[in-house]
Length: 113
Length: 112
Image 1 (tube, each protein chain N blue to C red):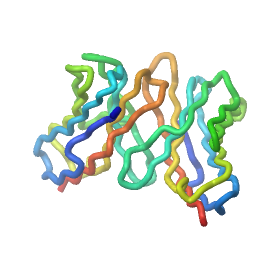
Image 2 (image 1 turned 90 degrees about the vertical axis):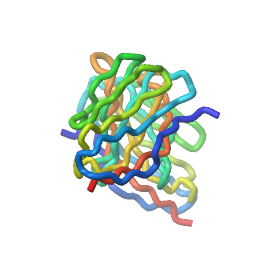
Image 3 (image 1 turned 180 degrees about the vertical axis):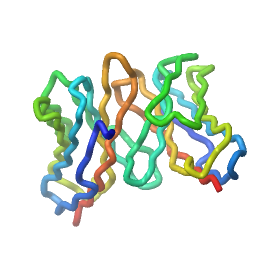
């Protein structure tokens, strides 16, 4: 049972435009959400996070939105750059009761120059 | 430089031959974990550790063991590897479970 889902395996966006990556989750008890970026032959690197008590967090070109009622979060990248081409994973941390980390299946973003 | 170091980067082994993948971090982090990455399945947590001598199962612990005798090291042990454990493995550490995790470069394991 996939508790964190990224339903789009891939996404192509023109350079300079907005990239929107989506993530859905099933467990309303998730306490914290994080986004990671992964280039080939490298480990994932942290991008941005959001606590469940917030609905938006911004860091430069990256903004994460959390819609708790819909159990949905999204990562916006504006403007998109060719160097943003990578696989993006969302991750959820349940908070109380367990210290497991749950990742989505990833979305491959390609930014076209 | 803050880093998580995994060794080896690549390993080909035969079914049933015990192996250990080492992981070391230099950031004095409390939380460490192991993941495997498989096509279409994303990253799945194998084991995690909240601190020295405190470990617990992730989502896919079968066939794996870990230990945390020192804060900086968190080795992954495959006592009797099988072909379905062929995968890309990542070690990660973070100050707390819900904070930014730092990942190693990965270990590509092939079991034949």
